[in-house]
Image (cartoon, rainbow, N blue to C red; front, side):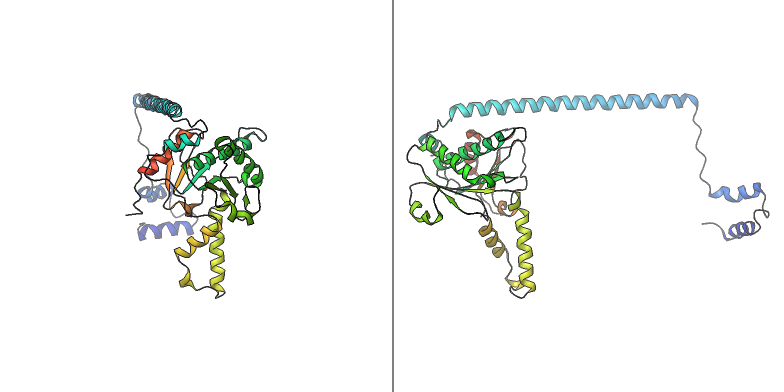
Amino acid sequence: MVASRETEIYRQDARAKGSFLSPRQREELLKPYLPSPPSTTPPGRQMARPIADFLKNQLHLLVFTILHTIFSIFIRIRQTYHVLLDRILAILYYHHRAPELIRKDVKDLSRIPEHLSVILELKRGDRGTVGLETLMDEVAEISAWCTGVGIPMLSVYEKTGILKAYIPNTHRKVTSKLHAYFGQSVPSLQLRAPNTPLFLNGESPEELDSLSSSSSHISILLLSAEDGRSTIVDLTKTLTEMSQRKKLSADDISLDLVDAEITESVMGEPDLLVLFSPNVQLQGYPPWQVRLTEIFHAQDNTGVGYQVFLRALYSYAKAQMRFGR
């Protein structure tokens, strides 16, 4: 801190408009409180500093290049290994559109999921309706595989929700694919989306009872990003308004109530979630429904394939459900 005597002298000089102290005295008064002047470096050391910085930067660049090269080689080897593995599995376990072969591939599994969910992506590079046709064909293929295995429930998540606008087209595509796999004994098909009318084998919903007695049945649910977090937000607002209007007690709001409401409005928790993308990205998938779901991801995979579907079922059969314990 500045000494009180020096402070008083400075104020007197200020009141006298600089006539009380000489410039020399003013410098001596402020000198103890000024920062120390920069140290002078000999010219030889000033020239050596840029050279040292240049060599250090080159060393860092060399280390980075070596690490980047090693990591790139590792990634290439890993991708090559996975490509070869997928090709071998595709040859050994190709279904030939025969349900008998699909059932043979899974006959040794200890359990099969009752509800399978997949995340698909609309290819942005495709022009016009090509991307939509590819997406519907992927849904149809997976539906046929699930029917062959005996999985009664399939939910398909696509972030943009474009399939919801083409439910009749998707239904025809899936039905055509089921005809290619099962011939005349086509399983009953139920296709729907949250908050949309039921589309059941091209018939009205009233005929559900007559069709449910079929030997095999597949129910497909189409999901999008609007069925995820926004559903939880809307439910929270509804419960809050009901509580404020005394229509619902705060003690009645529980996890079981929230789970029941979300299950009714969207869907229940799937047993298995399969990702066909090269990276683990849920893309806004409904978060409430994946609390206890087994998630399978094939590293470096770039498309929908039967071998990935089969590996996911084998992984699910071996998984241990500890439920947080």
